[in-house]
Picture 1 (spheres, helix red, strand yellow):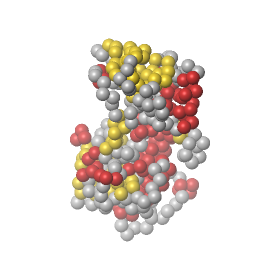
Picture 2 (cartoon, helix red, strand yellow):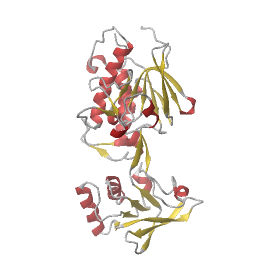
Picture 3 (cartoon, helix red, strand yellow):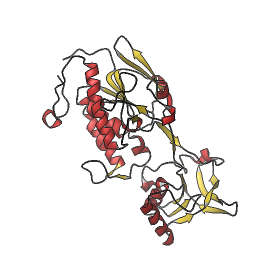
Picture 4 (cartoon, helix red, strand yellow):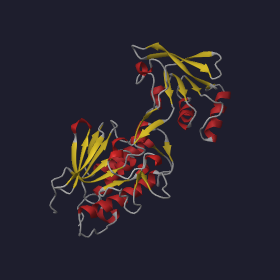
Length: 349
């Protein structure tokens, strides 16, 4: 057995989305211990927070797999390597750990993790919903106003009002029309910014009376019992300043997109260019950032001709894991063995 340095883990992975979860497996197969930090209260990233029941079609070996099911399988795959999860925790500060030759990651809530290397798999960064400017909105949030749908059955038999004109708004209008008592969709324009096929299906449902299409309208006010968080009606106003309408509603789903921010990572010396958005430039072969020992994979990693696909992120964490192993074991030879021969777990020598 090799002597372990005084660290909490070999690699701290920031982000518990699909790429971060697969990083646990990639590092674990090389005998490296992993801690995972995520600001959300559960694993899965956007797959869990935004579209757990939405099918994904470009995962090899799965003609279709719901995002939530993919996360469950990745979690099971990672369990073999006993990762330590720090959920509801934000990574705030990164300092060199000179005695151990690694890093100290300081997090919210007083959590401090000493690791040999850092692998950032934070997707598009920390994100939050763009909220509509409605008086008293916070009284209803989490009880009758929601910015994501985790299980569509939660809305079965309810009167649902959806606001927005993008893919999320249209896709959930189509899906919830199958289980909700009623679905109204409110958009500022006659034309939707969704996939043409989805928009065509929406208009077909509207013509059949299964979806109430409210265009061009915008949200104006909420009516109900704020103390109980119970919504009764959503008031909407015509864009041209004309009439207002009342829509009977138990639930409002505003889908106005997400505001993403790279947050404290911008101060970590990773070579981030604010003009390029919340991305970290990395070397394509190793996924190492401008700060040696700090790696990035998935949507947050950037290099020429990058394809932002989940499968791309899966490949990147494999590259990063091998680069990290060599960094933590200078001068040692890594004897690459395929998983079909090696199995899961075990040491690497």
